[in-house]
Amino acid sequence: MNADKRLPDDQVDLMVEVFRMLADSTRVHLLWALVDGEQSVNELAAHVGKAAPSISQHLAKLRMARLVRTRKDGTRVIYRLENDHVRQLVTDAVYNAEHAGPDVPSHHRSELKAVPRA
Image (cartoon, rainbow, N blue to C red; front, side, top):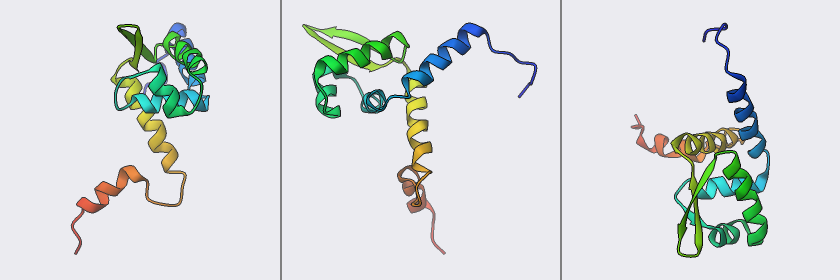
């Protein structure tokens, strides 16, 4: 990587905000729940085990940080990840955390099954 390459300050500020959003366990649970597809506030609240108003506040912060987006379905608000880069960021963070344990991370187990044994 080129050491002379400097990121624009506004881009760095947004990156810092993204990492700030990831520094909260409830928001990480919400993002991980959305990796597989969109969900309503009530579905996310049930998944995380917290009240819908609390979840809505977290989702509003994630939306302001451009990590999630919404769509209306009648009176319901449906949330999904903003884009595939957010999905990859969340997935990579989870996979990286799995490497901290003593066992083979679950995301590598299918690779082990695919390796032919001698």
